[in-house]
Image (cartoon, rainbow, N blue to C red):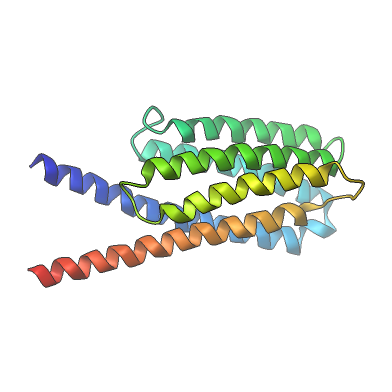
Length: 196
């Protein structure tokens, strides 16, 4: 009976992860679309989008952690919430200075949140599928963050497009994870049906 209950909990969490990854992918696609469509022509909207991105990440990690056993069981995500909230405030401050500062803040955030996402994926690896994509996403985020910090120190004037490219890659990883879980769930369902 206990094993059956554990299986039910695991199945419920995997369904949640699939939904969560689809939502993360959809938001990122919408954010990237808005960044390219409206961001270049309106500094105010571009600024709002840049503040929204880490704020959304904080909210998404909080909900996922609470839905997946609580903050105590998901410490990497709890830390990610704090890091993303701090980044939201830092972006607000940096926007008053220069886009180079903003890109530098995003670089530091991409490194920290990427490593924390990597930690979350490794912790979930044994229990859930599609974590290889999240591992790649976390590692890529950390590398992109280093590149952002380098770009921020150059004379070039960055724009929201620099961050949008990073967000687009993130959307792809979330979508791959969601599709992978969907296919995996379908495969297990077919297998169970054949065994009956």
